[in-house]
Length: 73
Image 1: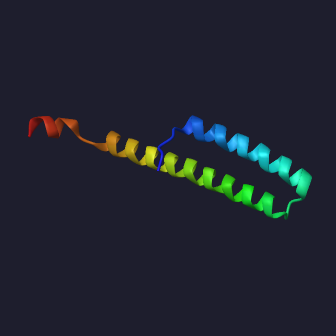
Image 2: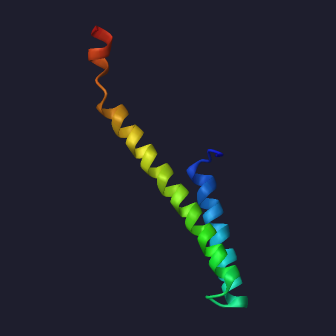
Image 3: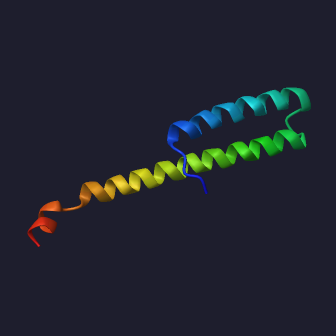
């Protein structure tokens, strides 16, 4: 899996969202192409949310780490 940053994923989400809107305008909301594009958009959004979760989790672990205890050990 390729690790991408939040900015790159946000850009991809924006592009995919616009693509989905264009496809839906042409083929309709229930067309297979629209649904496939929507699922791809869902995947990007999930990837972004996972990145957010892991970033927040790591930050909370870092902030709660007691460096003084580690240095004195």
